[in-house]
Amino acid sequence: MGVVVSIAAALVPIVSTVVRLITSLRSDPVHANPTLANIRTVGDQQHLIQLARQDAQAAREEAEEAVREAEEAARREEAARDEAQRAIREVEERAREEREAAQRALRAAEEAGREAVRAAEEESQRAKAAQETADQAAKAAKEKAQAAKQAQEEAEERLKKGIQPVVVPSPQEVASTKRKVEYKEGLFHFAVAGVAGSGKSSLINAFRGLRNQSPGAAATGVTETTLAISRLTDPNTENPFVWYDLPGAGTLKIPDWQYFNAQGLYVFDCIIIVFDNRFTMTDIAILTNCKRFKIPTYIVRSKADSHIRNIMRENGYDSEEDDDARTKRKALYKAAREQYTAETRANIQRNLKDARLPDQRVYIVSNDTLYSIVKEQTLPTKMIDELELLRDLFSEAHSRRCVPRRSLP
Image (cartoon, rainbow, N blue to C red; front, side, top):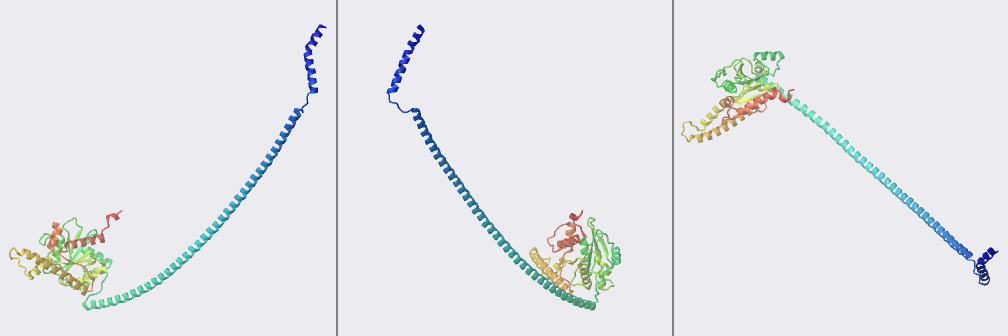
């Protein structure tokens, strides 16, 4: 029982509180349920949110539509730009093709023009060449006719003078002549021709570096001392030269026109003709045949010192005058030398013209001067053509007979 009373006493405050609360609940004004208000608030908020979401969605959709429209506009613009560029490219391509076509047409026209010009020039050249050929043929025919006429006239003139046509030696005659003159392969064979007293033998001695009185010298004299070809070797064994002294004109009982072949002059490397005052018929025959056989010839006027001294004496020089004569002698020598060389060259030119032979040089020499150059290897102050004669003689022989070392294998 006591336990029950204790429990009831403990519950009294609670009961009182409950009664008070019930009384308050009964008497106090009642507000709306906050939960419902909260629910409404939340619902309103949710509605607003929903509306905001809808607005946002609409705005997003509008934005997306705007983006799509912008993108579409951009695509259309890009397509338009591409189309414009394509159109530009097409225009440029057509322009390029038209330009290239125009250039090709221009080049073709230019080439056609050039071809036409070339064809015209070629035709002109062909016509000119044909004309030149015709002119040359006409000229050749005229020259041939003139040559034939001249040959006929020369033949008639030669027959009148007793000069016969050139006769070509046979191989047997060439071999026989080589044996007769003791021709040696590898040597140079130089022949000297001239009338008696022209200084022919003295010239040969000077070429060989000998005085006329030296042992082995060619015989000299005013009358012809050579009736047959004399073969004279060079005293200097290092020189591959052989010198031949030919019989002078009028010393042999053979016609002048036969002299060249009869003496076998066609085997020599050159013929030196010692000129006196005028060409003999033998000299003319030698020059004519040498020209025919392409054998070099050298016209030489020797004894220049003697001739110049004679002119000096004619002009008043006296070697017995006093010492003042030295200056006068030099002046007289210079004048006499110039006179002698001028007269000699004019004389040779006239003789060649009279013989109907081409003009050629004459070498004016002194045998003493030539001897000094060959033997003593000095250059005298009174040289005229001696050194040039040696140069031309040996240069021609070398060019005709020698093989240049650079051409040897």
